[in-house]
Length: 142
Image 1 (cartoon, rainbow, N blue to C red):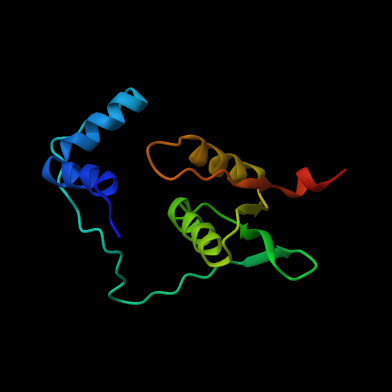
Image 2: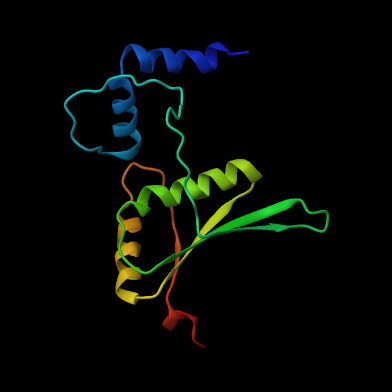
């Protein structure tokens, strides 16, 4: 059952969307410049189903086969800016389904491509953070 503690800030954010910007500015110091803020629908709907396909997902379990943690593995042979979003989707889905923490392991054949992905995820921003483990063939040699 919703409580006043939960619903009051939600109602304030709906009534004054700039309130959310003020909170972010207070806690983060600075947010990107914007013209206005507006409420957005909170239901997450997929009107046209779409399937995303990770290269590999591995779930590590205890002796009773209960999941302990999980890993999404992707092999990248080239640069694809859309991976900044889709990799988050893979990890979030696996964590929600298994109810465990999940890591992203990216194997890049080209060290230059690995550096580009590393820089892409170091930029951060206000989005959901993801810290992929980027591995190259050179990095696997002992």
